[in-house]
Amino acid sequence: MFVKFGNFISFYIKKYLQIDEHDKIKLVYLAFAFFFIIGSYSILRSLKTSIFLAFVGAAYIPITKIMAIFMLFPVMFCYSKLIDKVHRYQVAMSLIFLYAALGIGFSLIFLHPVYGVQNTQTSPHRLLGWGFEFFMDFFQALVVSSFWSFITSISTPDFANKGYGIIVGVSRIGGALSTLISLLILDYMPIAKSQSIPLLVFLASILLIAAGVCLYQIIRKVPKESLHGYEAAYKASKQKEAVHKEKKPNGLEGLSLMIKEPYVMGIFGLVCCFELINIIFDYKMEVLMSIQTNNNIHAMSKFMLLYTGAFQTLGCILAFVGTTTFLNFIGMRVSVLVMPIASIIMAALLYMYPTLSVVLVVMVIMRALQYGFNMPIREALYIPTIKDIQFKSKAWIDSFGRTIAKSSGSTVNLFLGGGIQGLVGLAVIMGTSATWLAIAFLVGKKYAHTIKNNEVIGS
Image (cartoon, rainbow, N blue to C red; front, side):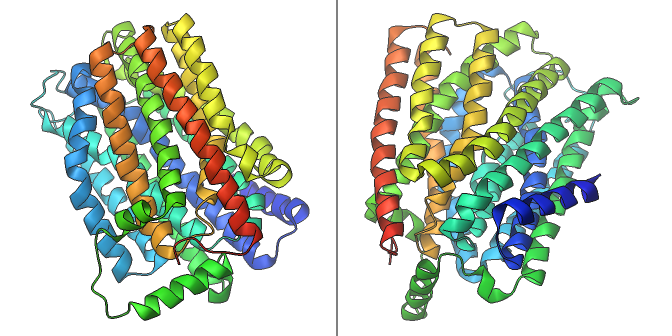
């Protein structure tokens, strides 16, 4: 099946995109690597919520987002050190294989009769639930972020316009298929329910290993000169490395660059605005789901897998149809405005109809737009930047930005009790969306100017 699917993707790329052979190899392996990463993430993220709710309890979800802030700085400091010591592809591969190993470890502990899934007691003292929550909290900031940093570092604007939609579209197929297979395992596989969740975590870890193998194939098959990406940014990064060769690595350099460069700070704002709105919507759905399913881990896992499969499928359609079309024919300046406008519409809908079915529809649309459309567009914004911004600053944005926004959103949730039906909650979301729209306009304008004049940001 994978061979036929790979042949189809290869044929599609060759016939319709008109890119050279080396770019075709990059695109095929990047698409399959992201296919496996998102397949893994879709399983683990679906289980993350149900595991934490069953192990620890819904009341502690906002607290986890606040606690993550204190874990952020040491994690990002170590990540920055890793970037200074190894090659670009080795950063992504190291984190992918690390998460695969940790995932296998979690799957084994979940089988334990006292510490694992068989224990149905909900308590804040169940450390395994907290551990898995934080493990997943940094998945995007480390695994997904480093993977996209690698993609950005080897991409030209033309490659991004033609290929990013395909990479994301294929990844959404991986997400939809993995959730479908997970549902079949939960419902039809002749094993105990207490064994099905550890099995899914193990399978997700194997998918990460497959992603690492795909990245290795790119390095093995594509000549080094075809991995430069945006040439102006590549040369600027090399010049900076030569000048600062003897300089001691700074673990906070990514944060410093983010603060100094208004363009990068703008991307930080884009991430923060989405995450703040998303965490308010997300918590509303999780509370209603917990009530609807009586906090049953098996029922909640099925609900989250169905939800994940739905937005992955819709996201796949948006990625193939919308992303490439928008970037090629409408451009970055307009494309970055779509998501904040959509969030205003979704907030108004949820304010009028605050039920589980409506919040599910809203979350499916928002997630599909984010992963199938907004994410590849936002990642393309890093192309005209130097390597340190692509890797170090991006990691801080994806971790610090998300964590700060989630903490802010969690604070709102604590005060509002998980609802946006009040005018205060609606005002928070509408105000954030308006700010998001203004930032998106300015960032899109700067990107277009930089590419047009063959300039580099951060040099």
